[in-house]
Amino acid sequence: MSDQAPKQYTLDDWHCSMRALGYQRMQDVQFECPKCKTRQSANDFIEHKIGSSIQDVQSILSFTCIGRFTANMGCDFSLGESDGGHEVEVLLPSGDVQPCFKPVAPDA
Ligand SMILES: [Zn+2]
Image (cartoon, rainbow, N blue to C red; front, side):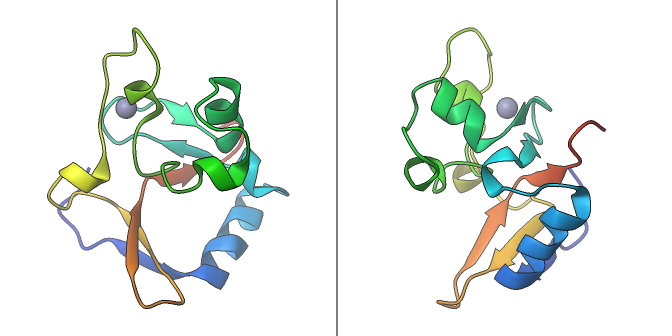
């Protein structure tokens, strides 16, 4: 976590930055929980039966740690309950700003 203002992306910039990290498909993108540092992608959420499709999980992916939905991880972090502290956020076409976990490169 950092005290600096979060980096804000437009939705287009956001998708470009995923491709720049080396991802072809959004469901493969791994996000790092700022608290427990677990990497998690839409695929992981689907594998744990938290949802059955990327549409099911996209509202929680990169916002609430997968640890909240799985046993034995000891992390239930959610950006919705923290006061700032996120490093990146996305400006949605609706004008809303969505805080997000930081995306990390595929095998960094
Ligand atoms: Zn976590």
